[in-house]
Amino acid sequence: MSSKGSRTIVRYSISFKQMVVEEIESGRSLADVRRKYGIGGCSTVQAWLRVLGKNHLLNKIVRIETMNETDRLKQLEAENRQLKLKLADAYLAKDCLEELVKQADKLYKTDLKKSFGTVVQPPSKGDTA
Image (cartoon, rainbow, N blue to C red):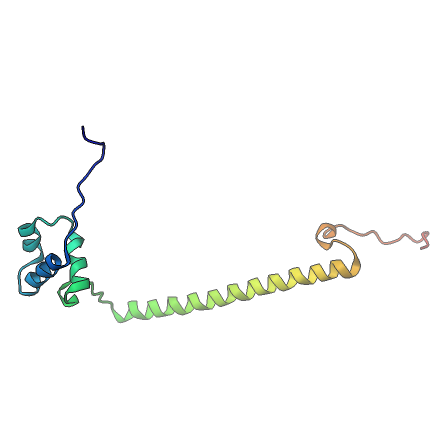
């Protein structure tokens, strides 16, 4: 009786990992070594190389850009910084205004947010206060 979804987890010893890394560093291809030892998973041996071996054997991603692309990237990064600063200023201004309303509410014993927009009628000529 087998349980549903059971699988075998393989654990490799440090000495085995070092042996595999040494073979790759001596010139054998990563795919050959994986096939030779039946190592599943593409990133398994690469992780061993990162930890135990020489990183120069791993594939690296190199991005080649034109000057226009580089300049545009710098321009966008600068614009992004400026927008973040402006956003921070806007938040600060909003917080200051909210505090101002709060202090005015205390001082005048009213709720300016609730009474905002209501029109106060000026007294008529015959009314005396």
